[in-house]
Every structure is written in structure tokens, then in C-alpha cells.
Amino acid sequence: MDYQGEEIVKKILDIILLFLVALIITPDIGLAQSQSYQLLPAPDIWYNSVDGMRVGGRVIGKVPGTFEDGAHRLNAGFWLGTKIPTYPVSYYFKFTEPIPSISGFQSEASVSVHSSYRTGFQDHGISFNKRWQTGFDEKNYKELSVGFRTEHRFDDEYLLYNQLWQNQWLFLVGVNAKITDESSIGRYILSYSADANVGGKYPEFLRTEISFQENIPLSKNFSLTGRLYSGFATRRTAPEYLFSHSLGSARTWMHSGLTRARGTIPPAWVRGGNIQVTGGANLRGYLHQDIVSLNQSGFPLFTSISAANFDLVYPNPIGHALANIPVLGKFVNLKSYLFFDAGTSLGLTRLEEHRSLFDAGPGFTFSINIPDYLGKPRGFRIRYDLPLWVSKPGSEKSFKFRNVIGIGAVISL
Image 1 (cartoon, rainbow, N blue to C red):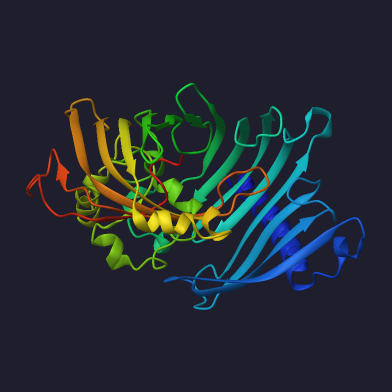
Image 2 (spheres, rainbow, N blue to C red):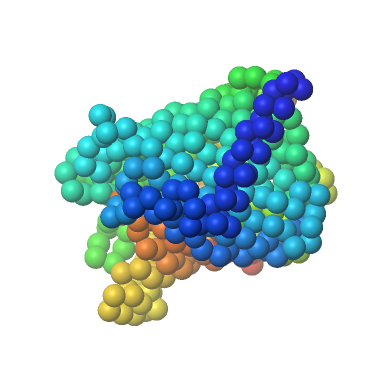
């Protein structure tokens, strides 16, 4: 990005930052005075080892009487790092405007503008979004999002593994699509995403992902859930968009406050090889090998990877007791299962050998989920998986006690 382009981005950021300060510090001015618009501020606090306690506030803007589906939707936040790091001020901003002419009941079309500047990473963009839903069953729908964004890692101090990132501006065209519905054998989710870097000093590249998940009821108490996944990236793809055996790509770590910056989860826990950030191939048994490589400044990343993940769900007494609690039982769940993962990958050069990897063991997932107005999951999942067997154990034994605490679900059905 040239000097003139950087100055334009800085001016845009200054305007957004001033707007956010006005909204959060003085919520009774501007749009809030209008009876046709409402601002709902709330305090917010978080922690990472660079910012220290990050103190600030969030604000939701909406037309009174609407929920999350009205016009002029605003979601923003503004924070100050109490350790006063190099970049002490951070913010997030998203504004969504529906397009009534091509929207219907639960089938909205909209345009969204977003801007984020926090934990050493900035991301700014615009997208067109469309949802299709037939009837009143919000579980069955199709979604499409097409957009452009620019992003830049400008401070490595927040990173636990610097080798997973580069620090040039990226200019990305992105497409995301999702279909979820019922088939003759069970509920399924088909999702696809693609990102192409089309400008800036960093080389052009293309990255795609596709996954298919299905839940097959076997009886009243047993079910089989499966996931097929493939990811492909061109050879010069930025490292934060490459794939690993067990972890989500580094770019996806920015989607959660738990993994956005080092120190929110104690670094010793991550470096110990027991914390899995879900995504990509999700070969649970190979987390420890990946983390050992990263701890030694290794680069366990791949340009292509494919995997299959299976969970055989069986009943457990605690899960049954939670399900029978009035009201609460609808939102809290403890699932027990036996899992099996299989995958293969290709490295940055074609000289690297293909490896077929397998792992298996028991696991448990505790989840709290309060769906949003469209029925989509909104909560958190914590997994405890025990990959007792791996096919390529390295210097370890194939059968060994291993445990993985997972952030997010391998299979989201």
C-alpha cells in the first residue's frame, strides 16, 4: 500500500474513532435524541497481557420496537488498555442497513460496513449479505455474503506465535455461503468460503474451504455426526490463511476474544499443547505435535488439507439430568461421544510427503446456547477430548493418555 493509500485509511479510522467516542461517552446526543432511533450503551471489560485490563463500553443502535432485524443497526465498542501499550485505544464498529426491495420475512438482504482496530490487528470492509428462508422454520435456510476488506497486522506484541503472521496489508475479496436443511437421513450443513488477495505489496493468492456436516439419528439415544472438510490455498498464501492439522488458521483466532491476543488464556496452557482452537481439519490427536513445532519456532502449515471427523454420540446420566431441568434444560447440554478423525495434507512444496493421519478416543462437550432471533447458536462450547490413539505418534507411543480442551465445536450440529 502506498503512502497516499495509508493516509486515506488513517483519515477513515480517525472519523470512525471520533464517531465511536461520541456515541459511547455521550450517548444522549445525536441519534439518541431522535424518537426514531435508540442507543443502548453498556460497560465492557476484558484482559490480555499486552493491554492489561481493557476497559471501555459497547453500544447497540436500533430503531425502537425492532429486535435484531430492523433498519440502521449499529454494533460498536471502544476500549482503553490500562497498561497503556504502544496502541492503547481500540475499537470495533459495524453498521448494517437492510435492502427492503429484495428482502422478505426472515429472508433479509443487507449491506454491512465494518471497521476494527484492536490487539495489533486492523480490518475494514463492506459486504452484501442475503438470506433465504422458506416458511417459519428458521433452522432451514441459505445464506450468501460477498464483500471486500482490507486488513493489516501492525503489532506483533500481541502474538504468541509470530511465525503464523506476516505484516503487509492484504486487500481481499471474499465469498461465504451456507445451506442448512433436513435430508432423508438427518440434518446437514454445507458451507463454503473463498478469499482472494487482489492488491497491495503482498503477492496475490487464493484460499478456499468447503465442509459438509450431517447428523444421523440411529435410535432414541444414539446418533452419528460426521464432517467432511477440504481446504486449498495457493503456494504464496499469507501464513495466517494457511492450514494446520489440528488448529484453525491464525486468521480465525481473531474471531474470539479468548484467542485474539496472548494472555487472555495463559500462554503456558497453550504452549503445553492441551488447548485447541477449533477450525480446519480438526485432527484432535495431533494438537500436541503441532504445538511442539510452534514452540520450537517451526512452521507446521500446509497449502492443502482434507479431513473427516466422526462422533458417535451416546447417552450419559448427567446430560440426561440437565435436559430434564425445566426451562434451563433447553439451553444447557452435556454431550458424550466416541470420536474418530482422519486427514491428509500437502506442504508448501510438492516435495513434501503426503501423510495419512488418524486418531480416536472418547470426548465430552458442555454447551450453553441461547439462540438468536433467527435460531442460530449463540453461546459457548467447551470440549474435553481424549485422543488415546494416534496413528503417527512421532516419538510417543500410539496408545497414550492425551487430553485436549477445545474452544468451539469440531462438529456444530
